[in-house]
Image 1 (cartoon, rainbow, N blue to C red):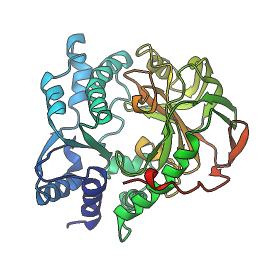
Image 2 (spheres, rainbow, N blue to C red; image 1 turned 90 degrees about the horizontal axis):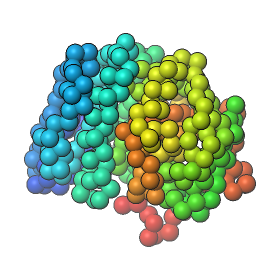
Image 3 (cartoon, helix red, strand yellow; image 1 turned 135 degrees about the vertical axis):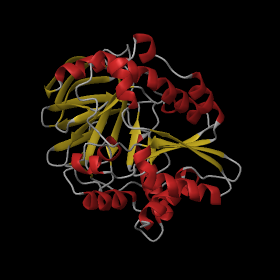
Length: 379
C-alpha cells in the first residue's frame, strides 16, 4: 500500500533541497532496501521533466570487498564513478541500510583503506557543490535495522523520521524556509564571534572561530536538518571535551569518547568502548586529528539518540564537533578522508560563552536571534 509520507518526503527533497529543474540530470543512489523512497523520487522527478536514474547497491557488496579484496582493490576508485560525479547536475544519497552492523567485526585497517578510497568521490562531490556546479541532498528511508538501532518499532521510527523532516506539515517547504530565516539570523550573529568556550561535564573547550563564516542548515543538503555550523581555526581548538553519546562510523561504535586538544590537534584520546578504533581513525591521514567542524544542534523535534548521525547531530540542545574534513567555503582548510561527528549533550549541564559572554545554557540560546536583514534572508 502506498504511503503518502514517502511521497511528501520525495517532493520536499526535489523542490526544496535540490530545486530540481526540467532537463537536469538527477542521480539517486542508495541500497535497494531504500526502494520505498526511490520510487516516489523517481516518479516525481519525471513529472518535473528531469532526466533521472537510480544507482542502487546490494547490501553486502562492500563487506565482500573488505573481507577478500587485495590492497590494490581496497584503494581502487572507479574512474567511471568520478566521471559520473562530474557529469550529473544533482544527486540524492539515501543513507538507508539493511544491516547497520555489517562491519562490526571487519578488520579495522582494511576498512579504513576502503573508506579512504570511497571518500574520494565524496570529496569530488563536495568540491563541485562548493563551486556551485552541483546540488546534492542526503536523506533516509526508514528500515527495521535503523528502527532497532533507535530502540523503536518500525512504526514508531517512521513517525519519528517523518516528524523530524516535517513532511506531515501542511506546507513542508514553507516550514523549512521559516527555519532557514531563523537559523540564518543566528549564523549572522555568530559570524562576529571570535572565540567560543564550551563548558559541561568533563568539558572545557575553547575554539577560535574568528574570520570563519557560519552556515544555516535548513534542508538544502540534509533532510531532516536544523543546525548552524562552521569550521574553526585549525590551530585554535584547545582543552578537553567528553562525548556521552556513542559515535557511529563505518558500522562500528566509539562509546563515551574523551578528547584533549592542543593547538587544534588531538593529543590524547580515550573511550569506554572502541578506543582502539577511535585511535585508528585519528591516524587515517594527517588531517584526521584536526577539527573540521563545530556546530549547534537546533532541531528540537529530534529529542533522542538514534545511532544515526543524520538525526543525532541535529538533536536540539546539543553541540557536535567533527574530526577531519573542514568546509572550504566557510574558511576551513583542514583536508582529510575522515569526517567523524561527535556529539556533546549540553541539555542538562552545559554552557557556551561567546567572547566571554554566556549565550547558551542547558541546550538553549538565552536570546532569540535578531531577524536577518533582507539581503541575508534565505531563498
